[in-house]
Each structure stands twice: as structure tokens, then as C-alpha cells.
Image 1 (cartoon, rainbow over the protein chains, first blue to last red):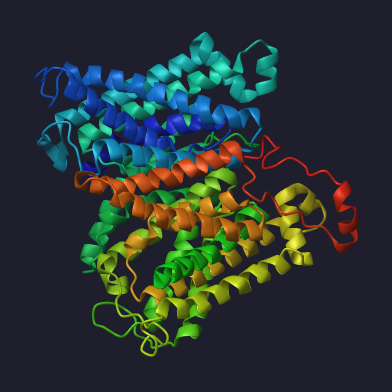
Image 2: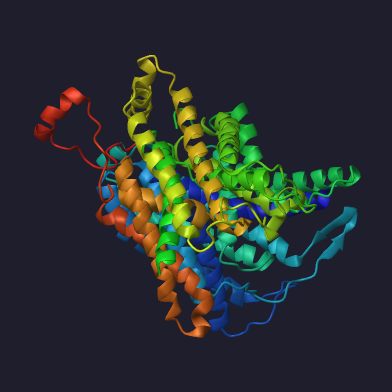
Length: 309
Length: 328
């Protein structure tokens, strides 16, 4: 019970990193980016690439990796941002100039999913990759099992979420981004270069996704489809929290992560006691979907949603 | 060679039926259904379970003969779409798309995991292939008559449907939902009807597919093969244009089957990656179409009342897809 709560927090912090990117793009560029899962995967694979290029750095504290991993994640965040900004310049900028509808932009991003997924599979192959040996968990009281790496995952995502929040709240660029999301015309009239804002939105969204992908890679493994399976939880977190709300993405991500783990284990126990042979863990993605239905029936605009959004 | 071409035409027809259903949802009603593959899958499995021989491995063996089980293959996806429509149609645009995508994933998981129902990854074998015993050599050609017949039927069905008063309201809801509401049309209800209808048509395509191959397993219904490729057909042909969508279906399926030859030239060590090459190609085609010709080959069909056709020449076509910026 408590164990699945802890697992839920770990999963939730990774979902949150992705959800912030989805909500930023949805708010400032006005469309739902289906390629966000693929960006997540790309980030994880870039980290894998740099990890093999960099010299072996041993391990630090009781983690399964050393400072090389942190450097690799940093480089991966930069490389992923570059790739995503290039995609924006080639594809999405053309569509923005054409004043394409948000549905059309969403559809374009679905095309990009298959290009990126196929590209990743062609370069790194369809097989599973690991950053390093999978760590064994430490037993805590009350049946909680935590790997030392998982402390790093939760801490790193919380720090990054906090940094992004402070960035949006206090820096000049962050303020300009929020102004653009509120009212593009007004922001432009006040001298905000909206094209620049769009580029920085992509950079922020892609870096957070790359970080999320790399952290998930540490926790589990790398597969070309890893981001696709995270896409639905990320979107659901955004819908649950309310589109365009930073706090909503954080809360939504945690709600989805925790409920996926908790509900799965509760239902599994229930089915076991009823002697029914249902493997609940296979249905984890479905839980996110049920969650969105419940939330939307109660609060149609999400928890922190703006009314007219 | 002839059987190869026939088999291509049969599959293109089956996908064409699905593309017509999706085109009705997207091109005429503006519903961004990323779960069209779920209806296809439901239709396929309904037809399979209704008509396959009884086994202890999974449900089924109801012995429903061929054309009758297609009714079930249409009704089950329609009913599921109806149930899903209640929460999902509260959402618009991107969130609606993700809800339908989540439905696809959920139904895929059920089909994949529930052995008692669908035999899981092993799939369902020995589904009756109508009249197979009589003409085993020319079977592709024979089935082409069935699949092609359905395709032509649905083409004229949708062609007429969008011109009926009902179809006019559906198009009106896509154009401006508030305006439709102000005219006293229950916009939500029309969206629901269109969602259900498109899903039912995709279900029929699924039913035809299992009777053609005689076998069904979850691997047929990946997001690429069941949903994305259908979207590609609609986008290539031109959304909102039934004729264009038909051409799009045959064209895209031609490229897809043709690219299989291409992968034969790959060195053996690249063989596992050749499949991804084809996936890559499909994605690139969509991006190129969107960048170069966003309205598709044929563009949006302009449906005019009969009395307006005479002044058609004087009317300059409005812009392609888009134009509105803030319809999230």
C-alpha cells in the first residue's frame, strides 16, 4: 500500500516533467503536441549516447552512476532542444505563418511521432538498452522498497520543476512567455518578440522531456516506444490539472502517477481475493483514462483550469 | 501477379472504407478521432468471435454466417463509441484526440491480455472465409468483388449523406458550433451521431478484414497500421472530400505495399530495421503533404445546393485547411 504510494510518487515526478512541457506548448503555441512522447524518448537515447561517449566516471554516493550521468543528461537536454527547435523551424513555423488551426498542428505532431520513433529505432535498433546494471532496492519499514537512484529521480525532478517555476515567475523571458500565453496580440504590441518566445518554449519543453526520459531510463530501461506509453499519462495530467496551469501540471502528474500505482495494486488485491485471474499491471495505462473521465465529469476545465480555455 | 494486385486492391478497399468513415468524422464533422483503429479492431474481433469455429481457448463459435455478422461488427463499435462519446465529446480538439487514443490503447490492452475472450497474442484462427472451398485459387479476386462492393456502397452512401438536411447540420456544426446552437440544432447530439456512424463504418471494415485473411491477432492493430495510416489516407486525398479519400487510400496503400519491395534490397543486418524505414516513410509523407499541399491532392469538396451550381465558376475558392486560430 505505502509501497505503491512511493512508486506512484516516483512515476508521478517523471510524468510531471513531461506534463509541464505539454502544458507550455498547449498554452503558448496553442496546440497539443503529440510528439512530446517521442521527444521524451529522444532525450533518453541522447543520454545513452553521451554516457557511452564520455569516460567512465564510477559511482557516487550510493547511486548506480557517477557525475558522468549528470553531464550526459545535461548534454542530452541541449541536443534534444536543438533537434526540436530545428523541427519547429522547418515544420511548425511554416504552419504558424499559414495560420493553421490548432487541430492541424496537433495532426502534424502525430506525423512527427512516427518520423521520430522510426528514426530512433533505425539508429539505436528496436531492442532494449540499459544505462547500467539495474540497482537492487533497499528495504524500509512498512514494506517500502526504494532504490537509491529513485531518491535522485524524485529530487532531480522536483528541483527542475522548481527552477522552471521560478524561471517563469521572475525572469524577463519567463514573464514574456506568460504574457504571450495570456494574449499574443497584446504581448506583441508591448514589444515581445513572439518568435523568440516560441523558440524558448520549445527549448524548455524539450529539456524537461529529455530530463524525464533520462530519469525513466535510469529507473527502468530504454525502448523506442517508452515515450508513446507516457504520452497518455502526460496529456491526462495536463487535462486533469487544467491546460496552461503550471501547478495543475505538477498536481495532475502526481495524481496520475499515484493513482496508476495505487489503483492497480488495490484492484489486483481485490481480484486475487475474488480468485479472478486478471493481471492488473497490464492495465495501468487504462487507469489514466478512467481518471480523466472522472475529473472531467466533476470539473470540466480541470482542477486549475481557466474557464474559457 | 494477378493475385498480388487483387490482394493489394482488397486491402486498399478495406482501408478505403475505414478512411471514408474517418473522413466523415474529421472532414465533415471536425472530430479528431485518433481512435479509429479501436473501432476497426472491435469490428474485426466481433466478426471473428461471431463466426469462428468454437474452441475451448476463447469465447466465440456462435456460427453466425458471413454477411450477418457484419451487422454485429458495425453495432459493437457503434455502441462502444456511443458510451465513450459521453465523456469524450465534452472535450474538444487535442484533448478529444487524446481521449480517443487512450480508448484505443485500453481496448488494445484488453484484446492483448484477456486470453479467455480473444486468445490474446495468439490470435483467432480459422475464421470462415466465405466460399473459400469453392474457389481457393482465385480467392483474392472473388473477395475484391465483396470488399469493392462495400467500398462503392459506402462511397455513394456518404456522398448522398452529406447532402441531406442531416448532413448539412453536421457540416454546419463543424463550421461554427455556436452558430449551429443558435439555429436551434443540438450540436453535441450531431457530433455524437457522426462519431457513432464513423465508428460503425470502421467496424464493418474490420469485419471484412477478418473474413478476408481468416486470422486476426492484436499485432494488426498497432497505432501505425490501424490509425495513422488511415489518417494519412484522408490527409493525402484531401479531408472533406470522399473521392479524394478513395484515391488517397489506394495511393497510400500502394506506397505501403510497394515499400515492402524496397526493404528486400537492404543488407541482411539491416533487415530488422527495414520495417522502421517504412514507418519513417509514412511519417515523412504526412509532413510533406502538410507542408506542400495541406488541403490534400483534391482539396475540400465544395458541396453546393443545386441552384448554386450555376454560379460555381464565379465563386473563388476560399482558403484551405485552417483560417481559424483559436478553436482549441
